[in-house]
Length: 204
Ligand code: TMP
Image (cartoon, rainbow, N blue to C red; front, side, top):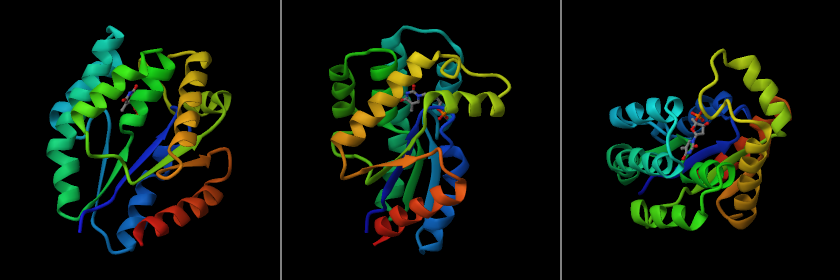
C-alpha cells in the first residue's frame, strides 16, 4: 500500500517545527514507517539550493524555479520512493509554500506556479496539509525570540507575511479536503489534541 504524504505549512514563526517530530512520533506509534523531510531541501542538492535561496538575492522567477528544482530532486530521491514503498512522508513545506510565498508574498502570477506544479508533480498532491495559522504580529514576536540571524524570507516585513498568510487561508478554503487550518495561537497541548485527531483519521 502506498504511504501517505503529509505536509506542514504556515508563515515563519507559526510554530510548525515545534510539532514536526511529535507528529512523526504519532505516525510511527500507529505502526507506520515515516520519513521526516523539508523544503527547500531534503536531498544533498536541495540543501545546497536551500542555502542559496535563503541567503542570495535573486529574481523572483529564479527563486521560484530553484524552489521547483529542489522539489524535483526531492520527489525523485525521497518522496516518491518512500510513498511507493509504503512509507509515510512528513514534509516541512511543499508546493503550497510556493503559492503562498512566491505567489502571495511576492506577487508572482499563480498561473506560472500552476504550470510548474503540473510539470513537476502532475499526479501528486499531499494527502493531508496542516496549515499553522497565526497573526503575523505574533509570528514575528516568536521569530524574534527564536532566531538570532533571520534569513532572507524572515527579514520580510509584516505586509509580506500578511499576503503569505492570506494565500494560505485562500488555499485552505479552496482545498478543504486535504488542508486543515490549525489555530496556532493556542497552547501546545491544545494544538496537539487537534493534530492527533487529524493524524488518527489519516491513519485509517
Ligand atoms: P522554513 O523556514 O520553513 O524551513 O522554510 C524556509 C523558507 O523558505 C521559508 O521562509 C519559506 C520559504 N519557502 C518559499 O518561499 N517557497 C517555497 O516553495 C518553500 C518550500 C519555502
